[in-house]
Image 1 (tube, one colour):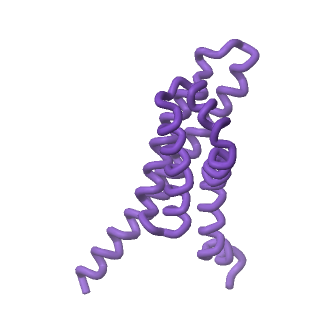
Image 2: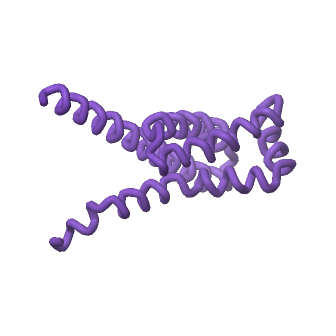
Image 3: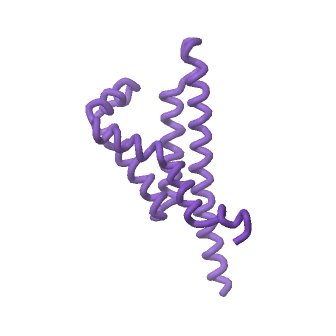
Length: 141
């Protein structure tokens, strides 16, 4: 194995996906363990009805993360988390409406979440590209 080929291994790939999904796994588990607190947070952001929305968020965060990590509908899980993250970013990190003391942190959070969206889009792109390449090479055989 050359110096850099260790980096292009399935283990590193899976660990990168785990890192990308870590906040959603932690968030989904935390919401499930403190459901009343999660419902209160959902209501705080104006989502109604709060209980079913909170349940949907828990299922989405955990289910889409597991789809990505288990490579079962990886592209779909990645697209779902990208759309969710983009929507949540515009709800929770409205830095342009924030008072000056909170603006700096909210601006950073907003753009960090856009980075997560980009990461999930890239995961979906790679998964779909790999499938398309595999299909076209098997069609040529």
